Image (cartoon, rainbow over all chains, first blue to last red; front, side, top):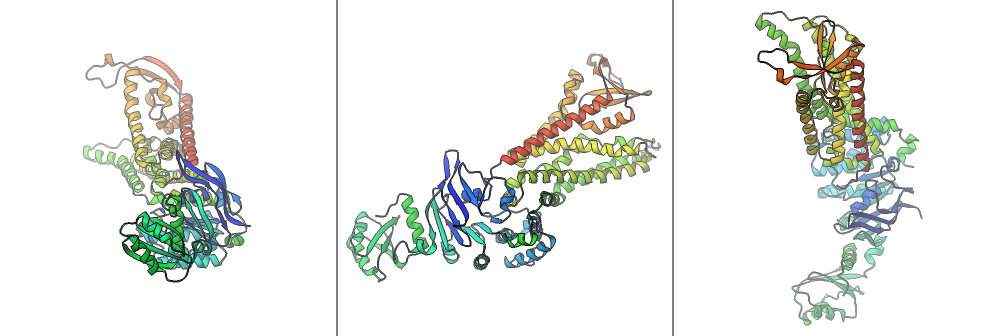
Amino acid sequence: MDYAIETDNLTKNFGSLTAVNKLNLKVQKNTIHGFLGPNGAGKTTTIKILVGLLKPTSGSVKVLGQEVHVDQADSRLNIGYMPELPKFPKHLKGAELLDIYGRMYGMTQQQRAEQIPKLIESVGLKDRENDLIGKYSKGMQQRIGIAQALLNNPELVILDEPSIGLDPVGMVEVRELFKAISKEGITVFLSSHLLFEVEQICDHVTIINKGSVLASDTLQNISGALGPAMIHIELANLSGAVIAAVKKLPFVSGTWRTGNTLFIQVTTYDDVRAEISQQVTGAGGVIVGMSQKTSNLEDAFIQLVSKDKGEKPQ
Amino acid sequence: MTAMQQATGTRPSWFTRFWAIVRYEMLWNIRKKKFIGVIIIAFMLATLGLVLPSILSSTTGTAITANPNFAITYGASSFGFFLFALATAMNSISSEFESGTIVPLLTKPVSRTMVFLGKLFAAFVIILISYVILFTYTTVGSIFVYGPQNNLQLVPLVLLGNLISTFIWVSLLLAMGSLTKNTIITVLVAVGLFLALFLAIPIVSVFAGPSPSLNYLPGSGADGSMLVGNTTMTINTGTDNICVNLVNYVLYPSGNVTFSKINLQAIQAGQTTLPTTGVLYTEPISLIALRALGVAFAYIFVFLFIAWIALKRSQILE
């Protein structure tokens, strides 16, 4: 299969700290691939290796079929990258920045004249393109960051937390923009903490923790791996007896906890909240809140990460 | 192949990308408040140098003495070189790291060597343009104030010498910025070094004499004197005086510079000139000019090499 990104046992150590640990990542071409993980999981370090900012300690990286090495300028010709909270020179105007970056990509004057106004409009910076970036708000810097990542009509766009700092309308606009560019055959690799955002636009997802892949599959397979539904119960004090009682129910296929919240994976589409409530109360548990919903990415994420942290399913 | 590349058909040339970085850097330089400040200060000082004699002559009632060599002798100033270098290069590399703008820059299809050379070239062009304007201004002004000027064909040589002297500091600042990635440390080290050399060299010269080792440090170097006709000219051998010594070499190619030590014990009250010991050693002006050039290029090369290697090896953690 043709991959846009392919890593093989990618490892990055900072002294005694292993930020990326034998990471094997595969991103198919023409997909919107979400890259998820808790804080400190190694997402940004991985991305910096992908774009040639950091040198891996061991392992290899291929982007668009080419081995990536630090300071290999040509390998970035077909890649667009937006860093987390991007910073651009304050002395340049928005349009000037795109013009200079366009020159670095070798775009002709005509190409720049066509592409830059189009991008400025699509990221919502029309009428502000001639302001100095130093006068831009955080959200506007984020928007110009998205524009510069798409400037060269790349084959692959790597976005590190693209929605940080955007207002709700901006977030929706940006999501629509990513969907639109994906339809043009551009592969989007997106790191985000906003799971609902990933659910809305990604078709593939990789979840990492402690620098290693926990799961990588289509969004549908990852979200559905837990079964048809998930029940969350928040208790005043979650005891082992409550968990043991819940596990006795025939439709419960698994449980795990985070603090005083118990996540119950069920094998039925029926509403079984009353039976669970009865079982919990019978075991001495005091329920503060309960909800039932179809399994989603958030459930899968929490289960995978909790499991990896040693909070194993009960 | 992307739509853009399909349209262009080829990958951008090295020069196209390099020129984009030069443009990026020059736009920054000309919009920097400190650079604009240095330009204003430089013009004020140049104006003062030209106008002050006129003001003094009108207040004292004495006519201005004609000085046909003003245009080729005015301009060499250690402090001026340092200020221009500081304004242009003090944060050229370090602030990219401090502000985080290095991240989007280095993820464009430009190599770190291109970024380094682009920044260096932009600094060169900016200082060159500033000096050309400044020298044109002082040269034209000197004709009005001091009368017709001799050897105007040597003005470009003076300018070249000043550029080389300035670039010792530019390369030092780039090396420090690239190594530390911190503008404050870069400036502190550079200012400390400048002041140490500025103060230490004359003090060393007084007590230890014009030691030949002074010729190998950036700055004013050793003090000597050269006899031209009936006039004794003071010659400073260091890298700050490349322009003056190049001009002296062209004008007096067979000139010899003698070095003596100040005789501190023989100083008496009321003396207009300091007593000296006998001649310690003599050097031809050609050697002094060419050695200062060689020393300057050696410093520039070493500092630039350090700056380039440090940038090449940097890992972008922030």
